[in-house]
Each structure stands twice: as C-alpha cells, then as structure tokens.
Image 1: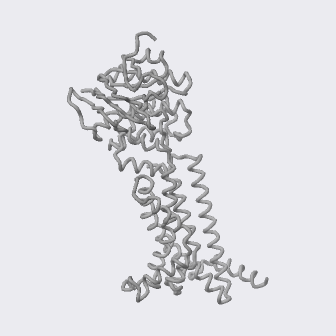
Image 2: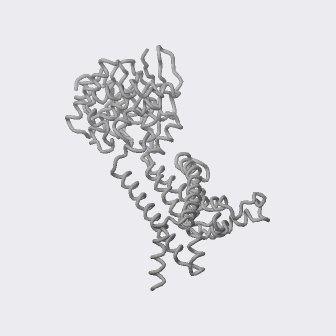
Image 3: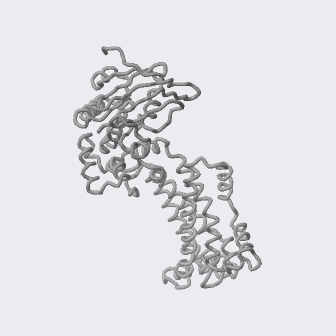
Length: 221
Length: 239
C-alpha cells in the first residue's frame, strides 16, 4: 500500500517572513506532482516539511496509508526520501555513498552489493563505483543523489530541483530515471522545478506555489 | 666541537647497536604517550562531537576553557598532578606519584584539550547538508552523528597527531610526576635532560635524534592525512 500526504493549513515563518500560509493540499498516492513557483515562495521549505526535516509552525503534514494517518517516526521517515538541491555527497566512494541508506538499515552485505550495482547501472555510474564521490561533476553528483534515494525503494520521493544547474545530457538522464520510477515503482513523487516544459513532461499534476499556498496551475505550458 | 662530534658518533653507535637501555626508554615513552593519547581520544572525541552537534548550555564557555587548555604549560600540569597525588593530596591514597600511571594522567591532561578542540573544529566545519543527507536517507540520530563524525575523520586524526606531538615532546610534567626513575619512569625527554646535566651526551644525543625522527614522522603523517582529506582517496577509512 502506498502513501499519500495531506497538508492541513501548514504555516511556516522563515527569516521573519511567513512563507507558507495556511497551505492545504493532498498529494495523491502513486502520482507525480510537480510544484512550480518563483524563487523564495517556500517550495523548498514545503519539501523539507514533507520530508519531516522541519515541523510546520502551525498546521500539520500527515502521511496516510489506506486513509489512516501514520506517526512521524523513524519507520515512516524510512519510507520516504528527499533529494536535496545540493546533494550532500559523502567523502567516500560512489559505491559507499549509494550503499549508505541500506547499511544503516542493516541490509546484508551481499544484497547491498547487488542492489547498489543495479542502481549504479541505471544512473550510468557503475564504472565510477570505486571513484571518490566528491570528484564527480555536478550532474554526476545529482545522479548519485538520485541513485542513493532510489536504491532505498522509497514509497515517496521528494525532489528539489533535480536538474537545476546541470547540463542537458545529465538532465535528460535524470528525467529518464524519474520516468522509470513513475512507470515501474509507482512511487508518489513530489518534485520542485522551474522548467515548465519539464513539469509538463513529468507531472501528472502541476501545482503553483504563490502567496504561501499551493494551487493547481492553469492548463497549458 | 670534539665533544659534539664524539657525542654524535657514540649516539649513532648506540642506535645501531640497538642498546637495551635506549630501547627500554623509547618503549616506555611510547607506552606512556600512546596510552595518554588513547585516553585523550576516547574522551576528547565524544566531548568534541557533543559540543559540535548538540546545543548544550554553556557551550561557549566550555569551549573557551578547552581552548585555553591547549596552551597549558606542562610544568603547571605537572604541579597540579603532583599536588593531587602527593601523599597529603586528595588522591594521595592511590599511591600513583612517581609511577607511569601519573605520567599518563599528566600527558592526558595536556593532550585532551588539543584532541577535543580540534575534533570539535573538524566536526563543526562539516557542511550541515551532510547531516540532512544522512537524515533523509533514513539515519537515526546516532547514525546521523556518526556520519558527520566520519566525514570529519581527517580533521579528527589531525587532532590526534597534534596531541601525540605535544605529549611526546614535553618534559616538565613527566619529570615532576614520574620522578625520572631509571627503568621505571625514565622516558626520552627526561633522560635527555638528566644526561645533559651529567655531561653524558651520548645517550642524550641518541635520544634527541630519535625524538627528532619521531617528530618528523608525526609531522609527515599529519601532512599525509591533510592531503588525503583534501584531494586523495577518501575511499579509505570509511568502513
């Protein structure tokens, strides 16, 4: 059973400014929902609240499974993940970066090796598995971040500008991976982007963040 | 000039012959300093990490005290430990004065602030995004902290090496609390001081050469670690 996410009148003050104001929305299970909006409108803050990294000042962000709300504990946190805008690459090899989430979950070594190698093939980093991850290019680092998230097979994936400031080639690879996640894993994907064409290509729903609230974007690119 | 030349010549002979007195002194020095460093790391690393990762009350004050401790004069530490363990001191009943244990305690006090402060600095300088990355990948609070500490491993190792450099080179504290007893508490630095006083330069120069060599090795290790952290293969020392 997948997860849906319900925001109920979420408000958050950031740097003395209320950037989320009674924001309510239901992110449906198994859909790719793309959030667009100007810089500084609270999109990243919203994703951080969705990732349970931050609590709202008012209101609630609740995950639901089969209509029943779940406690925001470690067990729930391990069913979702967020790809941060700057990935936060660990100073170790590409392989160990991707293996991290599995290791801390106590997955057996042999299974880790199989799953990590399979994902590295998907993101095109298998040949670099022994390389120091900090030496990767920005685009490769984004792919690494995506691999690190995907290997955990999360039910909810939060993507904060996954193709920002990277070249077209890497951008296309990442879009391909996201499409695959949609088609094969039926994960709930919540993504922030500034690219309307990308939002059209990937999104089942396109939302606009403005005045501290989410609303459906007008039809058309 | 002759004395110096003769001193060096005899010193090299002592080293080449692996003189047993010389080896015993070196071995005791390494034991005392090694144990002091181990204790300093075992205690200093968690304290440094706690100060870096938790918003503790009085954190600024604690850090100021620890940073002040980095410059503690060894003789003051020697005096303090001496008073603590002297027969009429509060811990006199433990009968530790003039034993290697007292020397380890004195050197621990010298190394602890260095290890703690440099560990704190290394950990606090890790980009906060690393901690967030660990969290969004499902780390619990302990795993999160260990991940940040692991990211800071090169800086922490630098702290350990700097602490080792400090304790192997000091003479004041171990002389005061160890008493420089031959075969029991006599280490490299105290032997150099004593033998120089006696005008017996062979052993003093031999130990001086070894101490310098040790210092050189410590510094080379420090540089290698720093280079590794900056550009080298960060793959090592992860698992």
